[in-house]
Length: 292
Ligand SMILES: Cc1cc2nc3c(=O)[nH]c(=O)nc-3n(C[C@H](O)[C@H](O)[C@H](O)COP(=O)(O)O)c2cc1C
Image (cartoon, rainbow, N blue to C red; front, side, top):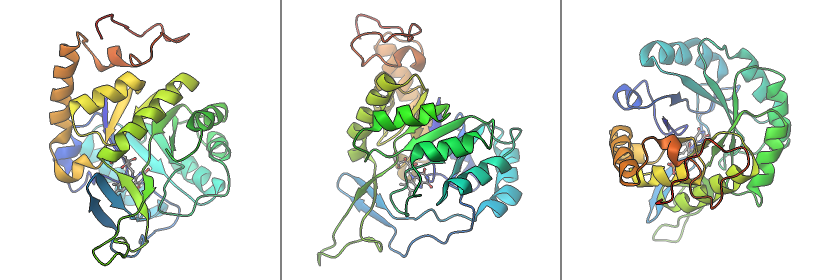
């Protein structure tokens, strides 16, 4: 399954790209409208992209009244709503307002490096949201935590149904005059530099919990996607690549099919977890073929 990464595709302005996906993930929605951070908010680097968008979005009321109904009618595919906030109750209040007919999954953005974090832990936020909705909850985690597997176990215990791994990691780029290129100074690094970090996070969380994982971070090719499946992801999301290649989902899907065939695998699900040396208990569905 291929998705977009939250904040990296506006499906209403680029529906032809969105329609290449299996599900669409919205930009993170917060209770109140946010204009975002001061410019510049995007800087390219040698190894990826820095952004400091700061969760610019129209806010919950406008999203529920205008954006979500338009997405539902125009895309005809499952919609994942990315929910953000600054306190656990804010996340929970948005979850309570989301209706199962329009929304397939709620992704809790617990990890934006460009805004202040909620004082509650990831697990406390998940627990508050669990009490507020029966919709599936995916916890989107930061790759910056020292022990992401421990966070994964904590959000699982709090009621998460899945994990989205990973968000951007904080980085800084300087201009010729040695001043920060982003208005905020540091920002979130995405793109190729994030791939090994994402792979490590997916690999660690796959061993730590049985929760399904959406892997993302630096995917540019079918081979990159295959590696995330092999580390343990059951779906892959495309982020930064969508800014330069609007046909990336279709291209990566084709490349992935060729990669799978070259490895003697018939579906991405056959590749899930094959980077792990031994089959793990409870993972009998895995097809650990000797030649891979
Ligand atoms: C411009 C930009 C905006 C983003 N906005 C969000 C957001 O609103 N919510 C969120 O959870 N992640 C956001 N992200 C992070 C992506 O969803 C994704 O986790 C990250 O970019 C790693 O994937 P990539 O390397 O393929 O881009 C944003 C990333 C970029 C580059």
